[in-house]
Image (cartoon, rainbow, N blue to C red; front, side):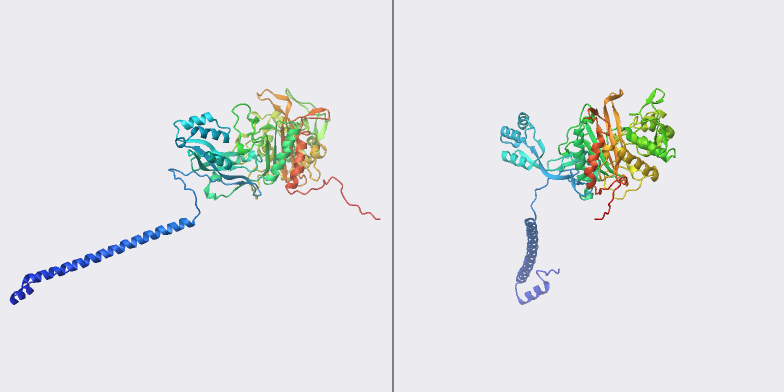
Length: 594
């Protein structure tokens, strides 16, 4: 900027020549300079005011827009923030094969206290005990009047209880949001689902974790936000499961059994359609684990998976099937059944005297221990061990349950010839009913191994072949004859061809000192329909006994078989199986003239 001098020399000289005062020139130039400076300062101030006004305008505009957004949004409670990983409360549903809810979530509240905020602790403690009778008034009062600053009262409460606590009117009683696990069907499928509880807890949320069953097995999946709430789809059918539980509970009562279990499995896919263990429990109110005594007495004990039993004569079909696979016998081969069969100090006897010999088919139909043991002698211990291993009897079942690894079969320490003979008719090797179901499914589906699963599996990969289709078909025909004319005659169901094998095994004493004389494990392993098997059903009763025809009866033919027959009668229509007539019966229509 060019600065004008206050006393320019040229004007000063001219002013002196004319006799004018030079100071007037300086005064005029100073006035003009001050006016220019004032104009610049005024322009600068006006610019600043304009910028400040624009800033205020934008600020008030932003505040107005935010207020409008809040006014038009849905109100919600503020969420407390915490340092560290957030607690994930959401848990996916569990559904059956048809999408029906087995386990879901319910929004509820927890109740906690800030004793320092209470006005009348005595009144609060007294009223809380009226709402929650399990609480102790003296303990509550001690906590409310002590040094504690925070106290959990109930992890979850109902809406009615929440309103009742509200009515107490104490500012020290507070509520926190909660999500609880709900099982709307009560005890149905309790052992499969297992149950859930709370893990990490905060005032504003709590972590729901699985404690048993598929809830524990798939805990990571059910809690994973990446699944976006997709449900876990199980293979069981809720309707079939409910019917099976009802029938088995009735049969357990009628047969005076200590416990019972049943498994219904798709013979081709290994999908478990229903699995029942009794006594059971309600996962909404899961009981405590037994700290002493026999765990099998607890309702939490899953007999289908964790129960390891000698399954008796249900094993006989494996020996006959393997012998046919090896070409040692055929269904009509005559087997020596002259008894007793002596091996060292051991003697093997039959329940009845069946004469000097029976066909291989009749060994199964009549359930001859001697005949089966002689077939096992032809097979040999090593080949028998390999065959049973291929059927899955050496390892715990791979079913998707946290309890599955505990159901490991009990094998003989030395698989000798006498071991092979006794194992052939179900003594000396203990396995779970689920092991037996998978092995019978191998026979029923034409000879390929199946893997038991609780997940919906529409297109499973075929397992390795254990026996030929011809041998599997002949084995099923033998099982059919056990029902039509053998030890399982009570298992015949009109309209549905049932094949199966009974098994009655003496129950071992708890201290390992031999077997009980009056306690048995009764099992019926069945397949249906026998002309084209689709399903396998296992029914096992623990210590059954029924008084009929003037005497006490414990064998499977009198106890487990009638229960299984009633179960098939109930569930077969639910599975979509149409009734049909046995091909052995002559059925037809005769045209007559008037």
